[in-house]
Length: 149
Image (tube, rainbow, N blue to C red):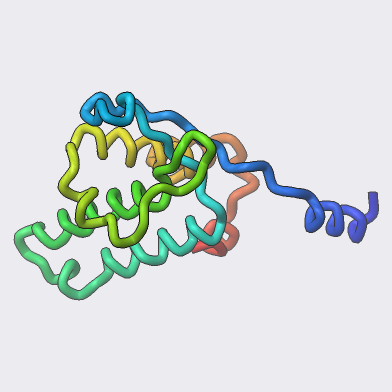
């Protein structure tokens, strides 16, 4: 296959549908004790990382001496990830931006499992980043790893 044929094949290839993973949430029996999280698209992941970076680098967070602002920023990051990744069994997004405050008041245990599952699925957890780094060390360079951030 020539370079141009390969290029055209990549551009024409349909993307696989989102990966959907069940997450046990026994704290929420009204939904049969489980919710789903889905893989993010590249634009969703990029937007999420930009928003988190902006939040963490906010002057109020950076100048906080008691750690409360930093802790709030970390909590926001998790809830924000839950909002964009929680879905039904078919992968349709459930939550909206306006649900962040309500989700932030939900069970810590349930939300922690949702956030952890989404982070792992979307390559955002420490373990998944290590796994990717170790899987192909020559494939990732500092310039290419910054291209999506």
